[in-house]
Amino acid sequence: MYIVSLGGPKWWQQASRSVSISASLSRVESPPARADATFKVTMLPGDGVGPELMTAVKDVFKAGDVPVEFDEFHLSEVQNMASEDKLEELLSSMKNNKVAIKGKIHTPMEFKGELASYEMRLRRKLDLFANVVHVNSLPGYSTRHNNLDLVIIREQTEGEYSSLEHESVPGVIECLKIITRAKSRRIAKFAFDYATKKGRNKVTAVHKANIMKLGDGLFLQCCAEVAQLYPKIKYENIIIDNCCMQLVQNPYQFDVLVMPNLYGNIIDNLAAGLVGGAGVVPGESYSAEYAVFETGARHPFAQAVGRNIANPTAMLLSAANMLRHLNLEYHSHMVSDAVKRVIKQGKVRTGDLGGYATSDEFTQAVIANLAV
Amino acid sequence: ESLSTPSNTPETTRGMVQDPTQFDVLVMPNLYGDILSDLCAGLIGGLGVTPSGNIGANGVAIFESVHGTAPDIAGLDLANPTALLLSGVMMLRHMGLHDHAHKIQKACFDTIREKKVLTKDLGGNSKCSEFTADICRRVQDLD
Image 1 (tube, chains in turn red, yellow):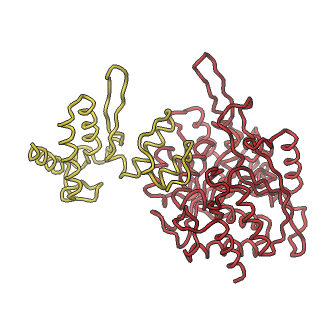
Image 2 (cartoon, chains in turn red, orange):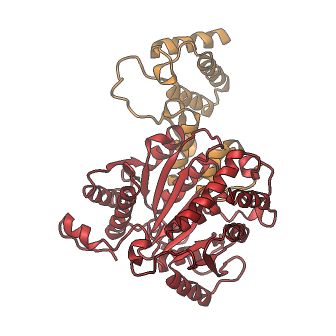
Image 3 (cartoon, rainbow over the protein chains, first blue to last red):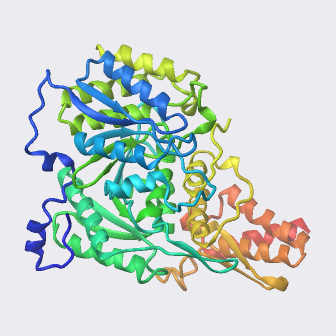
């Protein structure tokens, strides 16, 4: 829940406490993690290489004896497995389990009568307003900029993806970009809360308010207002085009970035490119009650389906993040350490990282490194 | 081998960072162009070396550098003229003066390649006028 009308800053802090940066704060009533208790997690493999990556996660979890049980759902627009009923089933599973892991549900380019894709509708129904992508360099895999540690926070329920378009006159389309004070404040608060919890120093808002004076102007204003409640965290802002340029020239100047929907989508992918591509960056989406773990750069990678070449790293690291979210710290480290060890050794790497291994070989290598 | 052909702006952005050689000419609407052109400028050395042109109908065009006004170094003979000069080269091509365009571009690139008279932003110690004089000398030599 977020509050629309404001009193002073102190009231805001107390009143919006329920907008937590992780569902664990609102799960106070759930039982503590015990080794013999199994956590139920909703799994949505999605399209493209999603199912293969999910298999990798399941194999690694099985080998590592991870106490997680998956509830699988298959929802897909391109495979004609999408329907309102399926969506409802998926949603009720999510409401029970609170935590999910998913691949991307591909959005076909053709307009099939509904402007909002299933992916967007899922986000809106669960109110997964915050997308967090961790951009960390992988030890042992060198890129132009090494030792990167950025966090990109993207508002993903409004903005340019509001799916509000119409043809006012034949040949003239108007596409509405929606920015609201409530959602801008909410994502800004999420970003500062996240930075506080993770001990980060700076939050930079990314915008194009010099052109979109009202829309991005409102976003920027909200970020600045929320920033005042966090005097220990430095607040800056940067225009999106300059931000892209700075990211490729000197990404070290950034720490946590927060931005509206479209810029977030672009920057997520740019940053993934900086550390090795879509195959290595984990990401997650949060609402006040749910957490969904996925890859950072969402790409169904259709060309790779069935060829056993997709890189499981991103999904495995995201699965490790999910385990940390479930307070299974030991298992979380076990999985992420194994993945990092395999990459550092450099012997078994998939094609996107310059190697020749298949997805299966990589997964097997990770499993072999779990026991250490 | 490009395993994955980008099919939208975010993927193109990622592709541009990982392997820009997979692209040749890109065309796009306003906002994406704004973002991508700055990104690509970052890949080649920044706005100080990036030329640009604005083309309208009937051959009307304005060529410009897109870096800032740099008030801190204005009037001190320190600025790097490359961006504006290369924009001028674009203009000559637009006007059909290809020989002149080629000569000036070659002279400019050779000066930068030699690294002897670079302005501060390119890592050297020379003045704008010295950099320019070197290019002029090369242009005359090419005649």
